Amino acid sequence: MTTYNTISVNGQQIFYREAGSRSNPTILLLHGFPTSSFMFRNLITSLEDRYHLVAPDYPGFGQSSMPTVNEFDYSFDNLANIMEAFVDAIGLGRFSLYVMDYGAPIGYRIAARQPERIQSLLVQNGNAYREGLTDFWTPIFHYWEHPEEPASIEAVAVMLTPESTRWQYVNGVKDVTKVSPDTWLHDQALLDRPGNREIQLQLFLSYGTNPPLYPAWQEYFRQHQPPTLVVWGEHDAIFPPSGAHPYKRDLQNIEFHLLDTGHFALEDHLAEIAALIDGFLVRNVKKIAALAV
Image 1 (cartoon, rainbow, N blue to C red):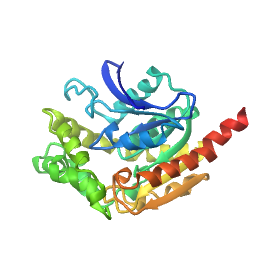
Image 2 (image 1 turned 120 degrees about the horizontal axis):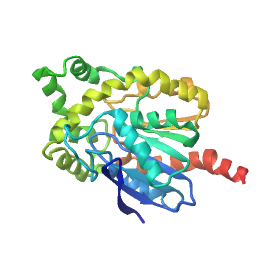
Image 3 (image 1 turned 135 degrees about the horizontal axis):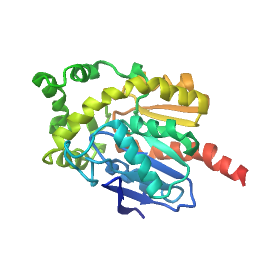
């Protein structure tokens, strides 16, 4: 049964969902934009009888603290610092890391700093290669270069509108009737909170710090060779498959699956992804743990 918890981390109240016995292998679930741990609600229920699952909300997202941009450094470096302190605060040791969208640059910072804690990577539409930054990113590139220009700001702020939030959920999905409207309505309500626009714009700008770190993350892959499962919505316009295939260059123990869906693949491919995760972890985490005993 999922519990809903809050813990103080570096002066921020971090909300997190937790389920499953701590005697089972742990999966740390790091969410994307514009959502929260809410995106993992059904995956947690699907796996909680076999795994220990923890899904936090970053500051500015979900039910965690939302200080203003003048009170808190909304950067990917700082979000990674908060999440790193979070896993220490709740007493996690080693864990598999599920990264999606924003979860990738946050999780890879942690993995590169503490590779000994990472039992495996579960990658779902989360980028670590420049090949994945295609035409969708053109307005964002311009914003990185001209962050004070009103037209540049508005060109990226469109991603905070209800139409854009819904688009992220339904674009590339074969049967949109399988995607609950609760998803984008939930996210939009949180985006529309006073002050959240400025938070998200700050993070859009901070995303420019991620591509320069790609070589370091790729070196982490090559040096430490974490077992990796890639489950990727192949019709995602934000993180297309061109960003998925390069993982195969650097990782030797990799299982690779392109799914007939879009950005939020868990919404219409939950059962398939849950089964792939379970099979992968049985082969690469549970089996190794049993042999160690």
